[in-house]
Image (cartoon, rainbow, N blue to C red; front, side, top):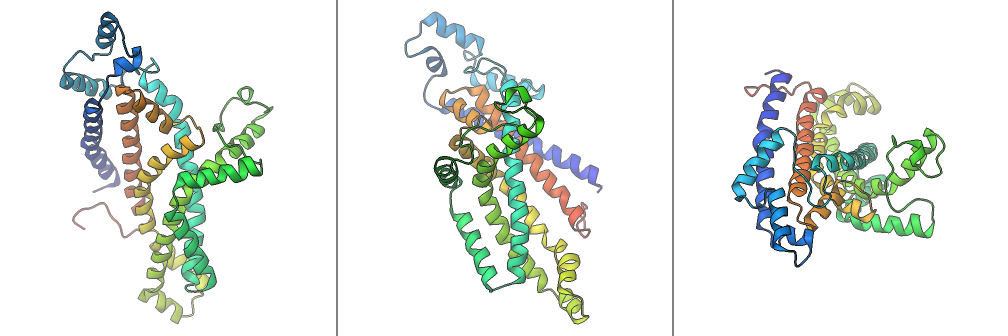
Length: 332
Protein backbone atom coordinates (compact mmCIF):
# COMPACT_ATOMS: atom_id res chain seq x y z
CA UNK A 1 0.00 0.00 0.00
CA UNK A 2 1.40 3.37 -1.01
CA UNK A 3 1.59 6.42 1.18
CA UNK A 4 -1.22 8.15 -0.72
CA UNK A 5 -3.56 5.16 -0.33
CA UNK A 6 -2.69 4.88 3.35
CA UNK A 7 -3.39 8.58 3.88
CA UNK A 8 -6.76 8.36 2.12
CA UNK A 9 -7.69 5.30 4.18
CA UNK A 10 -6.80 7.07 7.45
CA UNK A 11 -8.84 10.12 6.43
CA UNK A 12 -11.85 7.88 5.70
CA UNK A 13 -11.35 6.18 9.08
CA UNK A 14 -11.44 9.62 10.74
CA UNK A 15 -15.00 10.31 9.49
CA UNK A 16 -16.77 8.00 12.02
CA UNK A 17 -14.47 9.36 14.74
CA UNK A 18 -15.54 12.93 13.99
CA UNK A 19 -19.18 11.81 13.75
CA UNK A 20 -18.84 10.27 17.21
CA UNK A 21 -17.29 13.46 18.60
CA UNK A 22 -20.13 15.57 17.17
CA UNK A 23 -22.86 13.16 18.35
CA UNK A 24 -21.55 12.75 21.90
CA UNK A 25 -20.99 16.49 22.33
CA UNK A 26 -24.37 17.41 20.84
CA UNK A 27 -26.42 15.04 22.99
CA UNK A 28 -24.43 15.82 26.14
CA UNK A 29 -25.24 19.50 25.63
CA UNK A 30 -28.90 18.55 25.21
CA UNK A 31 -28.77 16.65 28.49
CA UNK A 32 -27.37 19.61 30.42
CA UNK A 33 -29.78 21.26 32.85
CA UNK A 34 -30.89 24.82 32.09
CA UNK A 35 -32.40 26.62 29.13
CA UNK A 36 -30.16 28.57 26.71
CA UNK A 37 -33.08 30.87 25.83
CA UNK A 38 -33.44 31.87 29.51
CA UNK A 39 -29.70 32.56 29.68
CA UNK A 40 -29.93 34.64 26.52
CA UNK A 41 -33.06 36.66 27.42
CA UNK A 42 -32.86 36.70 31.21
CA UNK A 43 -34.78 34.82 33.92
CA UNK A 44 -38.30 35.93 32.90
CA UNK A 45 -38.58 36.48 29.12
CA UNK A 46 -41.94 37.00 27.46
CA UNK A 47 -43.47 33.97 25.76
CA UNK A 48 -43.37 35.69 22.36
CA UNK A 49 -39.67 36.55 22.69
CA UNK A 50 -38.77 33.04 23.83
CA UNK A 51 -40.75 31.45 20.99
CA UNK A 52 -39.12 33.77 18.43
CA UNK A 53 -35.62 32.81 19.65
CA UNK A 54 -36.48 29.10 19.64
CA UNK A 55 -37.78 29.37 16.08
CA UNK A 56 -34.74 31.37 14.94
CA UNK A 57 -32.23 28.79 16.20
CA UNK A 58 -34.42 25.73 15.52
CA UNK A 59 -34.81 24.87 19.22
CA UNK A 60 -38.52 24.13 18.74
CA UNK A 61 -37.71 21.08 16.61
CA UNK A 62 -37.08 17.52 17.91
CA UNK A 63 -33.49 16.95 18.92
CA UNK A 64 -32.83 14.29 16.29
CA UNK A 65 -34.05 16.65 13.54
CA UNK A 66 -31.74 19.39 14.80
CA UNK A 67 -28.80 16.99 14.96
CA UNK A 68 -29.46 15.72 11.43
CA UNK A 69 -29.69 19.28 10.11
CA UNK A 70 -26.47 20.14 11.98
CA UNK A 71 -24.61 17.25 10.33
CA UNK A 72 -25.85 18.25 6.87
CA UNK A 73 -24.72 21.85 7.46
CA UNK A 74 -21.38 20.73 8.96
CA UNK A 75 -20.56 18.76 5.80
CA UNK A 76 -20.93 22.09 3.96
CA UNK A 77 -18.61 23.75 6.56
CA UNK A 78 -21.53 25.59 8.15
CA UNK A 79 -21.31 25.03 11.93
CA UNK A 80 -24.36 27.14 12.73
CA UNK A 81 -24.96 30.49 14.43
CA UNK A 82 -23.61 31.37 17.86
CA UNK A 83 -26.43 32.35 20.21
CA UNK A 84 -24.05 34.23 22.51
CA UNK A 85 -21.91 36.13 19.98
CA UNK A 86 -24.69 36.28 17.34
CA UNK A 87 -22.23 35.55 14.54
CA UNK A 88 -21.46 32.37 12.54
CA UNK A 89 -19.53 29.80 14.58
CA UNK A 90 -16.96 29.47 11.80
CA UNK A 91 -16.23 33.20 12.11
CA UNK A 92 -15.43 32.94 15.85
CA UNK A 93 -13.33 29.81 15.27
CA UNK A 94 -11.41 31.54 12.46
CA UNK A 95 -10.63 34.41 14.87
CA UNK A 96 -9.51 32.20 17.78
CA UNK A 97 -7.98 29.09 16.16
CA UNK A 98 -4.70 30.74 14.98
CA UNK A 99 -3.98 31.83 18.57
CA UNK A 100 -4.40 28.32 19.95
CA UNK A 101 -2.45 26.73 17.08
CA UNK A 102 0.41 29.18 17.69
CA UNK A 103 0.41 28.29 21.39
CA UNK A 104 0.37 24.54 20.64
CA UNK A 105 3.13 24.84 18.02
CA UNK A 106 5.37 26.91 20.29
CA UNK A 107 4.89 24.56 23.27
CA UNK A 108 5.67 21.48 21.17
CA UNK A 109 8.71 23.19 19.64
CA UNK A 110 9.99 24.06 23.12
CA UNK A 111 9.33 20.50 24.31
CA UNK A 112 11.14 18.84 21.38
CA UNK A 113 14.09 21.22 21.35
CA UNK A 114 14.77 20.69 25.06
CA UNK A 115 13.66 17.05 25.54
CA UNK A 116 15.67 15.40 22.75
CA UNK A 117 19.15 16.63 23.78
CA UNK A 118 18.29 16.24 27.46
CA UNK A 119 17.19 12.62 26.92
CA UNK A 120 20.26 11.79 24.83
CA UNK A 121 22.68 13.30 27.36
CA UNK A 122 20.87 11.55 30.19
CA UNK A 123 21.12 8.18 28.43
CA UNK A 124 24.74 8.69 27.42
CA UNK A 125 25.74 9.59 30.99
CA UNK A 126 23.57 7.05 32.74
CA UNK A 127 23.66 7.11 36.58
CA UNK A 128 25.97 10.13 36.57
CA UNK A 129 25.09 13.54 38.09
CA UNK A 130 23.87 14.86 34.73
CA UNK A 131 21.49 11.91 34.41
CA UNK A 132 20.17 12.40 37.94
CA UNK A 133 19.50 16.10 37.31
CA UNK A 134 17.71 15.36 34.03
CA UNK A 135 15.55 12.69 35.68
CA UNK A 136 14.59 15.01 38.54
CA UNK A 137 13.68 17.77 36.08
CA UNK A 138 11.57 15.32 34.06
CA UNK A 139 9.86 14.01 37.19
CA UNK A 140 9.02 17.52 38.41
CA UNK A 141 7.72 18.47 34.96
CA UNK A 142 5.46 15.42 34.70
CA UNK A 143 4.02 15.80 38.19
CA UNK A 144 3.41 19.58 38.16
CA UNK A 145 0.10 20.91 36.71
CA UNK A 146 0.55 23.33 33.84
CA UNK A 147 -1.82 25.92 35.36
CA UNK A 148 0.26 25.99 38.58
CA UNK A 149 3.45 26.50 36.54
CA UNK A 150 1.68 29.34 34.73
CA UNK A 151 0.65 31.03 37.96
CA UNK A 152 4.20 30.77 39.37
CA UNK A 153 5.68 32.20 36.15
CA UNK A 154 3.26 35.13 36.29
CA UNK A 155 4.12 35.86 39.94
CA UNK A 156 7.89 35.72 39.33
CA UNK A 157 8.39 37.23 35.87
CA UNK A 158 5.36 39.52 35.52
CA UNK A 159 4.78 40.88 39.04
CA UNK A 160 8.07 40.42 40.93
CA UNK A 161 10.60 41.06 38.16
CA UNK A 162 8.23 42.90 35.78
CA UNK A 163 10.12 41.74 32.67
CA UNK A 164 7.40 39.82 30.79
CA UNK A 165 3.66 40.44 30.22
CA UNK A 166 1.20 38.29 32.16
CA UNK A 167 -1.82 38.44 29.88
CA UNK A 168 -2.92 38.38 26.26
CA UNK A 169 -1.09 36.97 23.23
CA UNK A 170 -0.06 38.98 20.17
CA UNK A 171 0.20 37.18 16.84
CA UNK A 172 3.51 37.67 14.97
CA UNK A 173 1.62 38.58 11.78
CA UNK A 174 -0.59 41.20 13.47
CA UNK A 175 -0.68 44.61 11.72
CA UNK A 176 2.03 46.96 13.00
CA UNK A 177 -0.52 49.76 13.51
CA UNK A 178 -2.59 47.53 15.81
CA UNK A 179 0.25 46.90 18.29
CA UNK A 180 0.80 49.59 20.90
CA UNK A 181 4.38 50.93 20.93
CA UNK A 182 5.46 49.05 17.76
CA UNK A 183 6.72 51.00 14.75
CA UNK A 184 7.94 48.15 12.52
CA UNK A 185 7.60 44.39 11.97
CA UNK A 186 10.64 43.53 14.09
CA UNK A 187 9.13 45.23 17.14
CA UNK A 188 5.88 43.31 16.57
CA UNK A 189 7.86 40.05 16.53
CA UNK A 190 9.70 40.97 19.75
CA UNK A 191 6.44 41.92 21.47
CA UNK A 192 4.81 38.70 20.28
CA UNK A 193 7.76 36.65 21.58
CA UNK A 194 7.54 38.29 25.00
CA UNK A 195 3.80 37.53 25.25
CA UNK A 196 4.34 33.95 24.03
CA UNK A 197 7.22 32.98 26.32
CA UNK A 198 5.39 32.37 29.63
CA UNK A 199 2.38 30.49 28.13
CA UNK A 200 4.81 28.35 26.12
CA UNK A 201 6.79 27.39 29.22
CA UNK A 202 3.60 26.73 31.14
CA UNK A 203 2.06 24.46 28.48
CA UNK A 204 5.28 22.92 27.14
CA UNK A 205 6.83 21.79 30.42
CA UNK A 206 4.61 18.72 30.71
CA UNK A 207 5.35 17.68 27.12
CA UNK A 208 9.06 18.33 27.63
CA UNK A 209 9.20 16.16 30.74
CA UNK A 210 7.28 13.26 29.19
CA UNK A 211 9.35 13.35 25.99
CA UNK A 212 12.61 13.48 27.97
CA UNK A 213 11.72 10.29 29.85
CA UNK A 214 10.78 8.48 26.63
CA UNK A 215 13.87 9.73 24.76
CA UNK A 216 16.15 8.57 27.57
CA UNK A 217 14.63 5.09 27.86
CA UNK A 218 14.53 4.64 24.09
CA UNK A 219 18.16 5.70 23.68
CA UNK A 220 19.22 3.34 26.48
CA UNK A 221 17.45 0.47 24.74
CA UNK A 222 19.04 1.22 21.36
CA UNK A 223 22.52 1.74 22.84
CA UNK A 224 22.27 -1.75 24.33
CA UNK A 225 21.53 -3.42 20.97
CA UNK A 226 24.00 -5.92 19.49
CA UNK A 227 24.71 -3.83 16.39
CA UNK A 228 25.80 -0.93 18.60
CA UNK A 229 28.10 -3.22 20.57
CA UNK A 230 29.53 -4.46 17.26
CA UNK A 231 30.12 -0.89 16.13
CA UNK A 232 31.98 -0.17 19.36
CA UNK A 233 34.05 -3.37 18.87
CA UNK A 234 35.08 -2.08 15.43
CA UNK A 235 36.28 1.13 17.05
CA UNK A 236 33.53 3.45 15.86
CA UNK A 237 33.51 6.59 17.98
CA UNK A 238 30.67 7.18 20.45
CA UNK A 239 29.71 10.41 18.67
CA UNK A 240 29.29 8.54 15.38
CA UNK A 241 27.33 5.75 17.06
CA UNK A 242 24.97 8.26 18.62
CA UNK A 243 24.54 10.34 15.47
CA UNK A 244 24.41 7.66 12.77
CA UNK A 245 23.33 4.40 14.40
CA UNK A 246 21.35 5.10 17.56
CA UNK A 247 19.56 8.45 17.27
CA UNK A 248 17.29 7.70 14.31
CA UNK A 249 16.24 4.25 15.55
CA UNK A 250 15.35 5.65 18.96
CA UNK A 251 12.87 8.23 17.67
CA UNK A 252 9.85 6.02 16.91
CA UNK A 253 8.59 5.91 20.55
CA UNK A 254 9.10 9.68 20.73
CA UNK A 255 7.00 10.23 17.61
CA UNK A 256 4.26 7.97 18.99
CA UNK A 257 4.17 9.95 22.21
CA UNK A 258 4.08 13.24 20.29
CA UNK A 259 0.80 12.18 18.68
CA UNK A 260 -0.69 11.08 21.99
CA UNK A 261 0.46 14.29 23.71
CA UNK A 262 -1.86 16.29 21.44
CA UNK A 263 -4.82 15.44 23.67
CA UNK A 264 -3.12 16.66 26.85
CA UNK A 265 -1.79 19.71 25.00
CA UNK A 266 -5.27 20.68 23.79
CA UNK A 267 -6.68 20.22 27.29
CA UNK A 268 -3.74 22.12 28.76
CA UNK A 269 -4.27 24.93 26.25
CA UNK A 270 -7.75 25.53 27.70
CA UNK A 271 -6.27 26.04 31.19
CA UNK A 272 -3.26 28.01 29.94
CA UNK A 273 -5.44 30.40 27.95
CA UNK A 274 -7.61 30.92 31.03
CA UNK A 275 -4.61 31.60 33.31
CA UNK A 276 -2.99 34.06 30.85
CA UNK A 277 -6.29 35.62 29.61
CA UNK A 278 -5.57 34.59 26.03
CA UNK A 279 -8.48 34.78 23.60
CA UNK A 280 -8.04 31.38 21.98
CA UNK A 281 -10.17 28.32 21.42
CA UNK A 282 -9.92 27.30 25.09
CA UNK A 283 -11.59 30.42 26.45
CA UNK A 284 -14.06 30.32 23.57
CA UNK A 285 -15.29 26.84 24.49
CA UNK A 286 -15.54 27.74 28.19
CA UNK A 287 -17.62 30.82 27.33
CA UNK A 288 -19.81 28.67 25.08
CA UNK A 289 -20.39 26.07 27.83
CA UNK A 290 -21.23 28.70 30.45
CA UNK A 291 -23.84 30.20 28.13
CA UNK A 292 -25.11 26.86 26.78
CA UNK A 293 -24.29 27.99 23.25
CA UNK A 294 -24.97 24.60 21.61
CA UNK A 295 -23.64 25.37 18.15
CA UNK A 296 -20.45 26.97 19.47
CA UNK A 297 -19.68 24.10 21.89
CA UNK A 298 -20.19 21.42 19.23
CA UNK A 299 -18.29 23.44 16.61
CA UNK A 300 -15.24 24.09 18.78
CA UNK A 301 -15.17 20.47 20.00
CA UNK A 302 -15.40 19.27 16.41
CA UNK A 303 -12.47 21.50 15.42
CA UNK A 304 -10.40 20.16 18.34
CA UNK A 305 -11.27 16.67 17.10
CA UNK A 306 -10.07 17.54 13.59
CA UNK A 307 -6.79 18.95 14.99
CA UNK A 308 -6.21 15.73 16.95
CA UNK A 309 -7.04 13.45 14.01
CA UNK A 310 -4.76 15.41 11.65
CA UNK A 311 -1.98 15.24 14.26
CA UNK A 312 -2.33 11.47 14.62
CA UNK A 313 -2.32 10.94 10.83
CA UNK A 314 0.82 13.09 10.47
CA UNK A 315 2.42 11.08 13.29
CA UNK A 316 1.67 7.80 11.51
CA UNK A 317 3.01 9.11 8.20
CA UNK A 318 6.22 10.34 9.82
CA UNK A 319 7.12 6.79 10.91
CA UNK A 320 8.21 5.83 7.41
CA UNK A 321 10.37 8.94 7.05
CA UNK A 322 12.23 8.26 10.29
CA UNK A 323 12.60 4.49 9.97
CA UNK A 324 12.81 2.94 6.45
CA UNK A 325 11.88 -0.47 7.92
CA UNK A 326 8.34 0.82 8.53
CA UNK A 327 5.97 0.26 5.60
CA UNK A 328 2.28 0.99 5.09
CA UNK A 329 1.56 -2.56 3.88
CA UNK A 330 -0.56 -4.49 6.39
CA UNK A 331 0.82 -7.82 5.10
CA UNK A 332 4.33 -6.91 6.19
